[in-house]
Length: 275
Image (cartoon, rainbow, N blue to C red):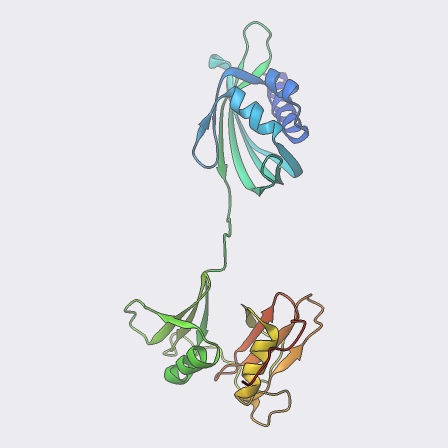
């Protein structure tokens, strides 16, 4: 395939990207083959009319494209172009946000009558890592039963079943996430502890969202937690007007791991106590 043909193919792919980004269905319609087969990232298959309809319903906040490969097949008058697309936007009909990095493999055919390149096959797949949620946090512990009681009785997590590993530990559930406690056997190196370190919000920690800031603070105080406690493991740090935009409480577990407890907002009034 001559160099000017390659440039024509690349220009066509660029125009397809521009038309998608600007929701220009008229231009896109001229660049797609009437018998287009489009496989979406979710595995479903669509035709030309479906693509044009879906395109009009999407608004892009970001669409960056990089052509990473071009394969020319002169005898068949076809070319295969691979494009990595980073996109972010919103579906106008539902308000749902979309985004990610995608690998687009586009097979273009040269029209015998017009001489224009048109996309005949378009395969779209997700590319890279797509994080859906935080699955679990793992912590080494020096005394499993002591840590188990802390996370069960103080923090209030629900213990769940744990696979039969060849080392001791415990699993807890919090919302859709999990906390895994691990008794490390010093192999191949000792576990990492914060031994002797105070409550430090800027050190390694994990955060749990709680229902009520006042309720949580009052409960901890009833257990002996305070900002001036002599026992470092009962010392807490409170930030009612945090820069983060939500109130925060920091405490330590038996191995000095830092835990943040935060609420969506600062409760207007402390919860009532007593009869």
